[in-house]
Structure formats: structure tokens, C-alpha cells
Image (tube, rainbow, N blue to C red; front, side):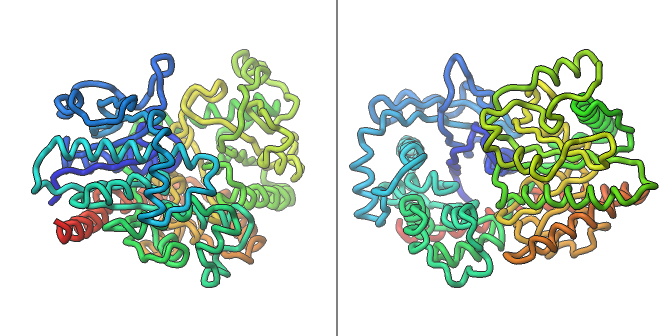
Length: 547
């Protein structure tokens, strides 16, 4: 049993992507187990003028550490609680004051671990300085505890924190280290550059591809952290294969989970579903000038703006094919409204749309396929593909497509509901990912009882197949087979899957929704925390050999 657990991530108190969901839902289970011996460390990116909505500064058991913290001149920390279920201790660190030490740190990392920082660009320096600051905080707290027998685990997430792990490894070998890659930097880069990852996986050599794709610094840092860590983990069997090939170390698999307390129950859920459907249909009406029946089928995809990796391209192509298929069914008057809930370079909510919603004066707007103005409409891949496919949202169209290029935090100016609120109103969610180490979006939608379509290239999709089988009507999750050469087949499978849901009666749909909820409950932290226990035990065992 460990005595003190640190976890460091760029997304502690900083909502960026899927890792925030991992940590913020896992925190309650860890807090129940370790109480205030659990400490999260994140970047302090906030100011008095723009305070963090996720962090509450206040008194904690670290109050007596703070005045005597051994920190470099100019480096500041704030201690409080992460405002999520469990309310764990969080330490936010600034790192600007560490830039003068950058060259010396990089030299040390090269000499000790062969981390190549010479080719660094983009967010590399910022990430490494944050990781360095986080490691200094851990070092300071452990010294303050002043207990040689203390069993300490320091857990670092993603390459962005790797340099903190390496620094700690060289300075405090008594601390057990865990490194988790949620997606390898080089694997993501291979996919992002349009190269086939899976058919050619056995032939890829990580170091060689890093040189080809100008990823030497991030890849060498990630690889060094993976090999130096006492326990190296990743989130799925899908990514484990990638790690073995590209990082050359076999990881433990610590699958991601979800906390059911994020999902409203009973009458509260019903009320949220009704409100979400009403708002989505209002927006569709205000854009297109059409009136939509209450039984309109609402479909969506979501995630990061990665057209190929997240399968947004295949989703839109499937909707185009679905539109053609339904146009031939003259007896079917029910419509489908499909949303793309993917944040982009959004400038502002559309004034004409917000005015139409406020007045209730519904008429067709110019450009009725998008809810917010973009800075880069000419180059936005989602908006341009919608137009290329000829979606004009005319009165006779049975499939309406709407681009929502903003973060749904409840204050976007159009929907003014959170993503989870809108999720409860959907009839289907589609996530046909090509590169998806785990897949929080399909797990979340299943937890909200939404019939979900994903692929076996997503860790969650593969887990569903291994755990629940392929009967999607029973488990509520349809897992499509995807590879490097079956794009068009996948499009048609999505079309047939959506038509199957579209034609279901209410009783059949309720059974599928119930199955989705049951599947998500199997992927709870209560069931999955055991995998982290194994990682922590392994790390402590390795650290004990160095004592």
C-alpha cells in the first residue's frame, strides 16, 4: 500500500481533452482510497482577471509545507482543491521562471537519457518547463515529509510530463514512477500525416519515423520516459501494440473508465433530455426555417478536430449516403438532424441565429449549416466538407447536417447548454475513429443511454467486443471493423446501422438505450481501478530495489 500518490498532467484543472475526463472521473475513486495523500499537479494558466473555473484555492494539509517549500526563485505555486467530485488536493505551478535553466536541463537529459531537444518546436519547451516545475514540487514535498520509509508513487501522464519523471528519477530514486501514454506522439503523427498505421505497423521503427516526421524531440522524450519509468502503462490493447512497436517497451494496460454520477437519474434525466431535444430542434428550425417534429431523430459526433483520426470525414460521407438512401423512401416523412459537435477556430455566435432564437420568428437563414462564425471558414475542414457534399438543408432533405464549431460549456451563445446536457437528447452517436487510443466520447454517450457506433480501432470499441460481444441491439454499442483499406465499406455499415436505429419502434429503442447504460456501467472506475493498483504495486516493487 502506498503512502503518498502524486499525479501530474497538463490537464489537471485545465480542461483540454480526453485526459481531463480520465483524471477528473478517476479522482473520486482515488480520493476515497488515499484521502489527502493524493495530490494532483497541474499548470497555473490563470490570473486574477481570468480565474480558473476548476480550482478552489484554500487551506489543505500542505499549508505548513508552502512557507518552507524549496523552489527556484520566481517559481510560484498555489495550493487548493480541484473542484470536481472527490475534491482532491491540487497544486498549480508556474514555470516561466525556469526557462533560464532550460539549456542546462536539456543537456542533462541528453547526457543521462539521450533525449534530443535540439529539434524542439511548438509546445515542447512549455511542456518540459511545466514538467520540470511539477517534479521540483514533488521533490520538495517528499523532502518536507522527511520519512525515509515513505512509499511514494509519482504518476506522469503523456509525453508533456516526461521530463518531470526523468528529473525525479535522477534526483529521488526512492520515489516510484509511473508513466502513462494515452497516445504515442509518433503514432498520432503517422496518422495525422495520412500514412497507414495498422497495415504497416510491423515495418515501422519509431526512431526512424520520428526523423522523417520531424518528431525527434517529443518521441525521444516519450520513449526515454517509457523506459525509465518503474511502471509503463497505456490505456488499451490497441495502443499497447503501438507502444511495443514504436516505443519498444511492452506496457501494462490501464483502461479508462467513467463515473456514473455524471449522469442524471430518473426524472432529472428525463427533464434534461426533453430540454436538450427542444433546444436542438429550435436551433435546427431557426437555421433552416423548417418545423421539426418531436420524433425527429437526433444524431451527433464529437471530439477533437482531427478529420481522419476521429472519423469525422467518414461520418459526413455516411450522412451523405444516408441522405441519398432515405430520399428513395417516399413513404417515410420523419427526418434526421445530424450535428458535428467539434470545436474549431470559432469567432463568435451568429447574431442572426441568436436573434431568431430569441424572437421565435423562424425563417431560413443564409448558410443554414453552421451555428457560429469561424475565423477560417475558407479552410475549416468540417465546414468545407459539408458544403462539398452538397448539404444545403432544404425543406425536402431528409437528413439535415449542422456544424457546431464551439466548446459546449453552457455559454456558447446559441445552445447555452453543456455537452453532457445535449448528449442526453440524442438518439444516436457516431464515432467512427481511425486513431482512438481509448475513446471517451463513445463511453460517455453509452453512459447517457445513447445508442452508440464506434470502431474496433478505438480501445473502448475493442473492449466492448471482448467484454460484451457484437450484439449491438443488446449492448447498445455497435462496433464496426475498420482498417486501412475498408473506408467505403465502413461508410455503408454506418448507413445501415443508422437506418436500423431509425426504423426501430420506441420499445426496441428503449431496449438498446438500456443496453448502452449497462455496458457503460461495466466500464466504471470501481471495476477498473484494479489495473492502476497493479501499476502502483509494480512501481513500488521496482523502487524498493533501489532503497
